[in-house]
Structure formats: C-alpha cells, structure tokens
Amino acid sequence: AQTVTQSQPEMSVQEAETVTLSCTYDTSESDYYLFWYKQPPSRQMILVIRQEAYKQQNATENRFSVNFQKAAKSFSLKISDSQLGDAAMYFCAYRSDYGGATNKLIFGTGTLLAVQP
Amino acid sequence: NAGVMQNPRHLVRRRGQEARLRCSPVKGHSHVYWYRQLPEEGLKFMVYLQKENIIDESGMPKERFSAEFPKEGPSILRIQQVVRGDSAAYFCASSLRHPTNEKLFFGSGTQLSVL
Image 1 (cartoon, helix red, strand yellow):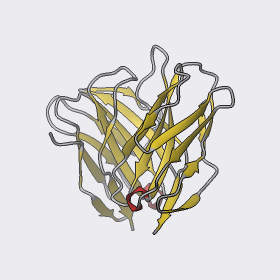
Image 2 (image 1 turned 135 degrees about the horizontal axis):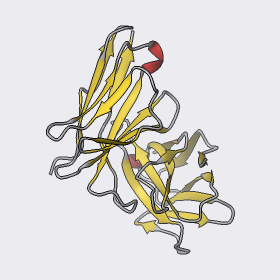
Image 3 (image 1 turned 120 degrees about the vertical axis):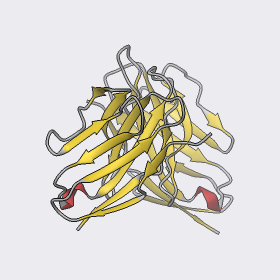
Image 4 (image 1 turned 45 degrees about the vertical axis):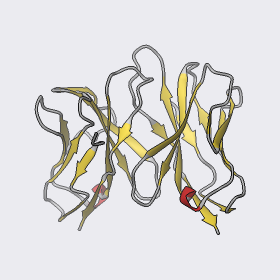
C-alpha cells in the first residue's frame, strides 16, 4: 500500500522569504501523480501544483515549485516570495496512474505554514 | 459555474442519531468522492461513486455508513447511530470523467460534531 509522510507538522517563514515543505512517499508503482494541496482556515482544498511521475522536469506554478526526486521518493514544495495569504495547512498527496486507477488520493498529515509579517 | 457544494457546513448530532451529509458536484460531473478528515490528520478516502453506482467503498466503515449518488439530486453520505469517533470534517470532491489525469474539485466540507 502507498503511504505519504510529511515530517514537519509546523513551519514558519518571514514574508517575502522562501520556505520548503518536505514530503516523502512509498510506492511500488512506477506511474503515479503527486500533488500539493493548500487548506486555508475556510477548509476549501485548493490544488497548488501537480507532478506526473513520468516527467523528469519539476513542475512550477508562479511562486510555487517542486523538487521531485523519483528515486528517493521525495516531493518537496518550495514557496518563493512568501505572502501572508500563503498561511495555511499544506497537504502532500499521491494518486496511482495504472489502468484501473481512480481519482482516489492518499494524503499526508499536513504541514501548518505560518507567515510572519 | 458553481463549484462543489456541500451542506450543511456544520452539523451537530447527539450519539445515536443519524447524520445526512449532502454534496452537489460541479454541474456535469458524474464522479463523486467522499473523504474524511479527523482532527490533526490528512484526508482519508471513503468512497467513490458514479451516477447510481458505488465503484469503490474500500475506505468506508462496513457498519453504519452508506453513500449514494442518485440519477437526480445530490450525493448523500449517511451515518446511522453516530458515535463521538465520527466527529470529523467530511469532504466531497467531483470530477468530470474517470481518467486519473482529471482534476478533482473539492467542496468546503461538512464539520460533523457528535455530542
């Protein structure tokens, strides 16, 4: 069974600085997707970034980028130029991509990010 | 275009009562997923439904929990004879099609509190 581990329960960053959130996962599959979701106090789950395992190039979305290390099964999220609105819980998630797979996501336990003004 | 709508946002029940949670997917979406988030934990998959069919209920407790997604109307997650351990946030997500490269849209969840 696949597992996702986030070893940092809480992180803090100064506004305008850069922060990296860690995520490791375990799987025997070769085809899968990895995600970072943001959950602000409103509870809405917001997709931040997505990475296909077959792509070697790291995904980037504006100030958000990932460091995907497939062999090490590591998938960290880097937030550059942190803003107050980035404060939230961040979840790393895994999804299989084999022929019969569905959209079932496996989530880590989350990292609570605080942004200091 | 409205997103995934869940209601109620907050639901309080006493032990032994029934809880009914509703989820209206994005218009046109026929795939619905239910997840549960216990305090201090990530979301855990419960059940995946297509219109009128349960496709995968591997994450749903065998007793007291049921889900449906009728041809017309919202998807319903029903919890009978609730216990304190059922207190959690329940999230619904929907997608247009089955393939795994389809984006999932999440609702804002229903917070169930069992007294």
